[in-house]
Length: 141
Ligand code: AMP
Ligand code: ZN
Image (cartoon, rainbow, N blue to C red; front, side, top):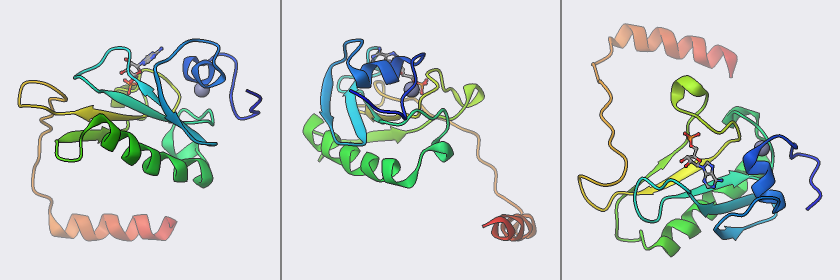
């Protein structure tokens, strides 16, 4: 498939181009979904843009716009309409990204033991700090 937004040296770009095999679930003009090769739980799937970008913020809106409707379709097809699951997206090695092509994980959580185990530390924020931070963020919008 000719697509000037894909690169040669990327495993997911190669999957999109059909140069390496994948268990394709579904695709659109701008997004592609397939089964994860190292599933955390049965049905663990990935949804990727047909645009090479390492980080979520590098992918143009029209490619991002195809991802969530496709993820929804795939989640329903996996049988998650009454199930529990995580929709997860990592950016950068410190955030646990291994493949540097944007991807969303759909990870079924069939029970407490299987699926994604999360447990990040939470501490209540200081309201003044939140207001200050909000001001800084809004200045850049
Ligand atoms: P992340 O840690 O968010 O970068 O996740 C990368 C995911 O891609 C992992 O869950 C891998 O199992 C998956 N993966 C890597 N190579 C392939 C492949 N060839 N086919 C399917 N899934 C893959
Ligand atoms: Zn790529």
